[in-house]
Length: 522
Image 1 (cartoon, rainbow, N blue to C red):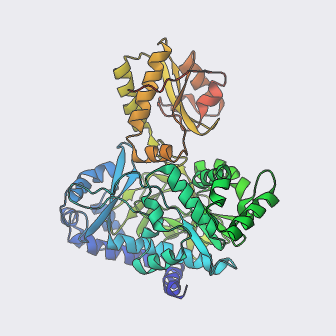
Image 2 (image 1 turned 90 degrees about the horizontal axis):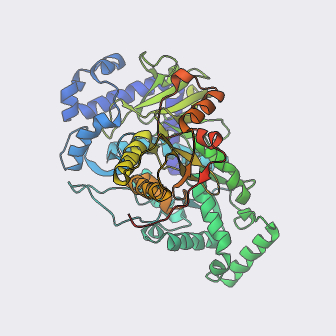
Image 3 (image 1 turned 180 degrees about the horizontal axis):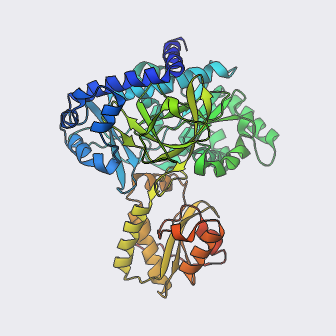
């Protein structure tokens, strides 16, 4: 922990004087970018203030950065930043299937400027956490490690790679589940191996995952395979685990298996909020610490123990915030946010994304020192992201257009809506005269197309989402619109979309007849 005291103090100094810290960060990033092709094109060497930076560099979406990033992936140097790109990571897109984010040493240092203070605060705030082991989300290998056409590695192998090399080495010595488990391709084998290591870790103190469903599914697998797993433990540990489970009763609290467990870090806001209750079945009293707003592109905020929301990471990237009450005005800097206001973050990072619109919605809920505390509210664009699947309306529309064409399907109304029962999945509500065999084939094609998306496919492979289902409806458009209006949406603001973000269809068509789907080859 002593190695993290200095990063923590640097953050505290920045949080006391956020304007000065952010202005210094902007100067550094402008200097880093000035020697790149992007910097020459935008005259970054002439930027001498935040206002002149805004005048020279427009706010952009990923789609506008994509041509530059494609050149980086092909092997070109100094395109967006003068720093060397060492790898790229995949993230979900709003109009493209996947986004590709270039990583430089400078970008990783900015990640460290948020993650190191978070870890210091976490271990300093919870008694008994020091000296324990930790579980950092390790996912199964879905394919062999890939590279771009220019030879850049694609993807992190585990969550600790967001930290610097020294901190990562320290974390690996504390990891309850070794990183090699991430090289297991078979999902069931990966789960059983993960659970075996976790059961052996009687000193487990901290769990870090993204979606709460990721951990809930692990615990369901633990319950289902307990006898098998106990056979792989030492007799003493197996007896301890068996006794702990039996003492917990019919719905076992797994806290007895890990008596030193103090904190679980996971999403708890937005769509994740409705899935926290399921996690509480296994961990009824363990502290659940909400994740800050950490995206593949960068860190906006990180949690501070004892405070609502998460603190803006003013020691990392240069951050701007579009005021959603005045979206055409000049974005605000971190120290200008007002409590209760809703904003959308804009990032400038050492990876070469300059004034990149993240398209998340956050609300200011207070301050820590002189820096805002914010809470994630949802997505600004039309994206459904309950478990990390990041399905956009554009993806769904393109995929369903392919299904319509291949099946010669004619419909009067169709909408894809998230559904929770019997397990979380997406359901296609469709008003059509087509035979059920045609609808079944269309759903199979839709599923195939959506699984071309890295994140949706990932959630399906982990069983966080079940397969697509379908239901036939009548008078679909009118019924759906009427239900939306009854929920308080203005008739004039209703925009037709194949993706129902709010689950309106489930309420509009509670008795819709399910279609028997044949999982035939397509």
